[in-house]
Image (tube, rainbow, N blue to C red; front, side, top):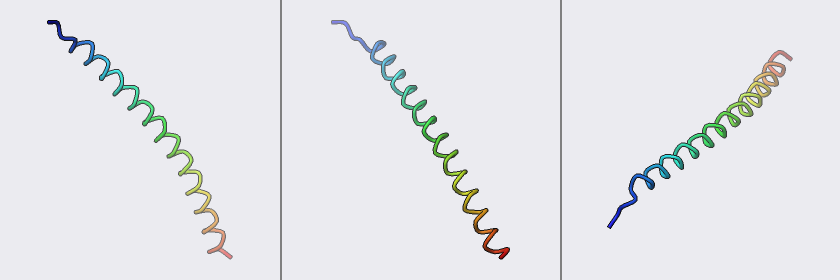
Length: 51
């Protein structure tokens, strides 16, 4: 009987890499959006505190 562990391992490794890449892209996009909103909120707070 033959075992197909190397092919399975390659498939799992590829899946892990793809999943990690997707998560990193999502995290990067989330940080960019979150940074924009936090900067906007800081500007509003500074404007209100100056008034």
